[in-house]
Amino acid sequence: MVRTGGYAARLPVLGALLAAVAVVSGACSSTTDGQPLTIGDVAGLPVTHFESGLRPDAPKPDVRIQGITGSTEDRLAAAAIADVTDYWAQTLPAVFRQRFAPVGRLLSYDPDGTKVEVCGGSTADAAMNAFYCPPEDMVAWDRKLLLPLLRERFGPMAIVTVLGHEYGHAIQYRLGPKAGIDENTSTIVKEQQADCFTGTYFRWMAENNSEYFVVSTSEGLNQVLASLFFIRDEAGQSASDHGAHGSAFDRTYAFQLGFERGAERCAAIDQADVDARITEQPFHPEDNNDGDAPINEEMMALVQQSLDQAFAGAGVDGPRIVAGGGSCPDGPATPPATYCPDTNTVSIDLAELYQLGQPVDREAEFEGTESAGGLGDFAAFAEVASRYTQGIQQGVGATLDDANAGLRTACLVGAWAGAADGDGNVLRLSPGDLDEAIAELLRPRSLIAADVNGHPVANGFARVEALRVGYLKGSEPCTRQYG
Image (cartoon, rainbow, N blue to C red):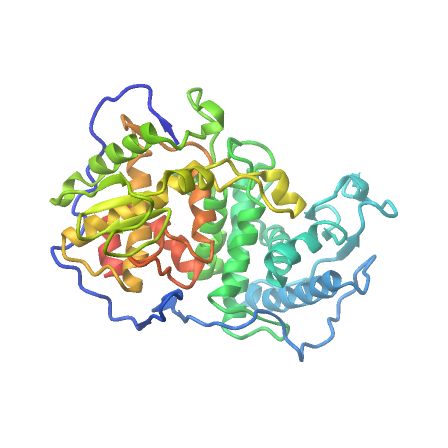
């Protein structure tokens, strides 16, 4: 996040922010002290908690894979290919009235092992990769580096996610005109469609249709979203670049679109659809330090100003951001930022926010080692904003200590981010900022999607969706959808 070149006009008022008194949604919710809150459903499915992965009684995959080994990763990959094949064998005729043919060639390779010539290149040059090759109708994956890293970092469903995505590309080419795919289709459209198709596959799995896998709608889908976050493009890449896959915000959006709306909606994704909502963009000439702002008192004063302007239409006094160690004298403590209802202040621990706001260490991410960095500046600012919006919610009489409050808070943080992404703002989002917020939302103890006591909503799917709703649609849906 960066300060704009000049302070011109007021931020766009967020409009009718909240009803005078918020009505708690009728969805079922529960809370255990110190534990995440469970509420409602996930796109119409119950919120479930169990270990996701390969079924103990899963059949032996009837697929022929070149180079396959007996490793855990290859066994998961083989099951994933067999499973996603079953899904599309049912879906292609049912949705698109088209006969299905499975992918013609499957390849598991070690980039450091025997070289295999594929798709005009070599597996020796395809480390940390999985891909679909249209001329050979082939799905291939790196079993030595990529799949073990995904499984160790995010669990078994990360492998299923990646291979589901690659199979989605094969489906695109089978659909052709029905998916709007031809030689002129941009990479970003193809990638958004493939992520969307992956979402439809996981919906089918979450509905207990898979013979091979089970996935919970809480921790299981969290693994999926975390793996999509991991394979995001670098901040500052342009969506028009050849090979662009999208930011984490873009990729999770497409996955959730498929999960919620189905394969037919995915096939309707075209350039106009992508251009209207894609967030991936190159850095602005004024984005110093790759858009990473310092976490200091001056920036916190600008965050205060930005929030005050954004929520000026709420008709209540926004809280003051104060140096208070991240806790309240007689109230909750959710460091590094805490909303204190008695004084209508946001108490912050600047030193802890500084650590959280350090740039993401991408090298450590890919090495699977402990990151020396943080989550980025916007993750820190968004945590402060989440506590600020608690004050706005209290001012209009909304409940602060249930799961609706957590989702409403994430939505309002998204609305603030959307307001700060317009013209003439005291602060402006930089490429990667929304991804930093998603990284925070996917943490077990996310503060952006937490109530006043720091209890986050249990499932990351709902957290990310709430932020996206606010960012794309403003504050009005935050009340309508989240009570």
